[in-house]
Amino acid sequence: MSADAIKLLKPRVFDKSKWMQLPRDVVIGHDVFGQLPAVCNDLKLGRSALLVSGRGTMGLAGERVRAVLAEKYEVTPYLAGEISARVIKDAEKAASGMDFLIGVGGGRVIDTAKIVSYNLDLQFISVPTAASHDGIASARASVPMEEGHSSLEAQPPIAIVADTGIIASAPHRLLAAGCADVISNYTAILDWELAHRVKGEPMSEYAMALSKMTAEILVKNANLIKPHQEQSAWFVIKALVSSGVAMSIAGSSRPASGGEHKFSHALDRLAPGKALHGESCGIGTIITMYLHGGDWRSIRSSLRSIGAPVTPAEVGIDDATAVEALLMAKDIRPERFTILDMGLTRESAETLVQMLYKE
Ligand SMILES: [Zn+2]
Image 1 (cartoon, rainbow, N blue to C red):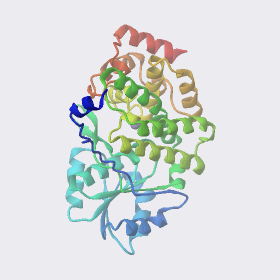
Image 2 (cartoon, rainbow, N blue to C red):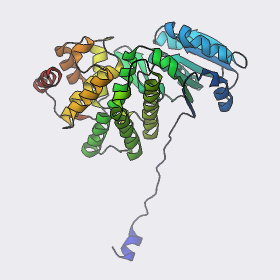
Image 3 (tube, rainbow, N blue to C red):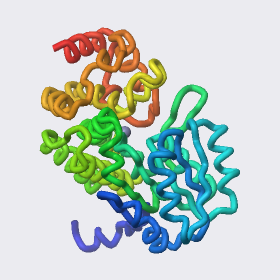
Image 4 (cartoon, rainbow, N blue to C red):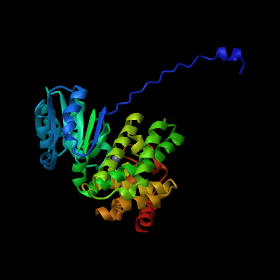
């Protein structure tokens, strides 16, 4: 192109802008609750907090967190027995006028604290008592709706304080589910690349690289994931935080949630309460990895060696329900294009379930 021709071109204005909201303090390790006052002080969050915890987790960890903070902070405990619109509204009332929130518990408790903090525009500290999914560090919250649970964008925790002793003492099933949630990053990324090629959806290479690396490190060290070992808990929490950071970089859950997550949400609706979030994502990843032409057998053997289920039957779900979930998956968040949008029919879904889960 000649210099004159270039002058004729209208200059392209660079008008991109982007927010990446990341956690500020991440403290992981043995007996770390004692560091909570230092975290609160470092973040200058104020003096009063609502501590949201669950029925079992309040006694296990919530009380200890409160005791550790009692000297300098005014911490009011709030027992969230379930996650529901009623509990969220009630917790919002309890938290009004306070400076920040602390969520001490499993996924439901952390999600409740996340939603309340988002609605009240307050910061929250995530204190997970199990490493069962990447919501402990992400902006994403699973919220109860009439038609089942839906995943919404809220805000990431300002800090994560994860005690490996407490996490290692939780049932191994939870840790294995967390690993499966991380392993599902593999297919989430393949779905993102597919959406980029087919629909022109923008990609974030940084987010993809981090998400993929996190899954790779976990799979490479799958033999180190053992029940009730603090080192395993340490390892999985770091992977979950890293996945959460990948989502923060992307500004969406895309790097860690593709067709396998849509399958998981469909199963939640069709067979509520059967599988843990990460478990059904792992089971779905086997199918979507096969559809992508990837090494689905190695995904399956990693899941197995960690102790995560690899068939619907292992979580008490029959084949017919798994087929329905595969077909329903594409209608959940339909704007999120995945391999399940590439013409999957009932016959092919039935064949896949027979072939991949019976071998
Ligand atoms: Zn997930």
